[in-house]
Length: 426
Image (cartoon, rainbow, N blue to C red; front, side, top):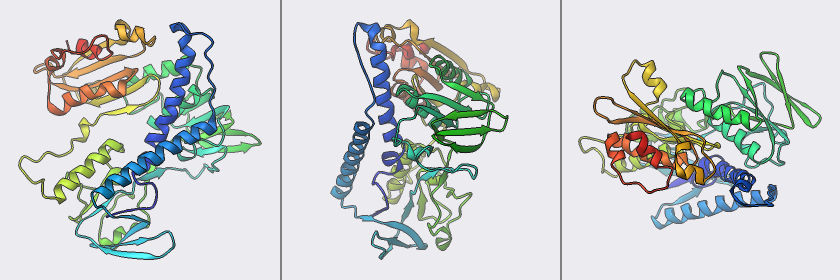
């Protein structure tokens, strides 16, 4: 049985991954058309039709939900539209849309309630000019000048998306580089491209207030600088949806709203599991889906065989859908050096490859981190077109302990961007 108060498929379908990437795809198409005159096309025009874009997002969402509902129904999963809460270790109550309640007994319970955008006390989100990320898929009107607060993954994706749709953009960066958790060389490549595109960077500035002045939004920073625009967007993290979940009634321990789990995604109550953002692990849709699979295997008795294969979160691939795209997996070069670990780092620019020139986009590079003694691939980063797809090769290598020789001796297609991986491995 699944109890769901919103769209089946979770926040990734409704609020986050899918709608944001659909909007980015629209922006990328517009950017490509603008570059296409260098590829032999003339008189190419492109304008964003916001109403048509909204309809496209609604269509994608409804199709994905319909597919998911159909799949669950085919497996005899009962779907309950409502809001669930625990009332005991084995009891769940669902509040239905009409206000009535249904009670259920359960042998196993999975908590997968996700998270929501973090809104600081100094920000008053109105959904009109001052936006959370969930007000911006898409916004009511396209910003003429968007001030984005937060330079993590979500923030830089919005910067790219708004700029590619024709907005002027200012990014408030609280530290000295965008993407503070990423490889500095990767972050520098994105910063360089942002500056080339005319994006204003307020580095080392922490936003402390947002004020409305007529049709203008003013963002004030702790260093005295102010950023003015038509809209402000907050992208400063998330908080778990654990309020009202009844954790105490079931004896489930939480920490800062998250439910700590072991390698089998079990909470301190052995038959109650947590998956996705609520578990406090990597907030990635791919990780949440894998956690769900592992829970299902355990509950159905397919797990417990020795040696048991558990999720290694350090080997999870991730991507940022800016332009150029950014993707990484495993051990980062900067982290290896910080730990004093001996590694071999090889880097190949896309500018030396035919497919990049054919695409008229030679930005970026491939970087592979490997063990100098064994050649085992420990990690890697990719900056460039289709990086989110290309990182899959390195992800398979990192997960399965493959070597650089395994990659290099694979016969890849020519001409492709993937050839840069083979060359870096060589």
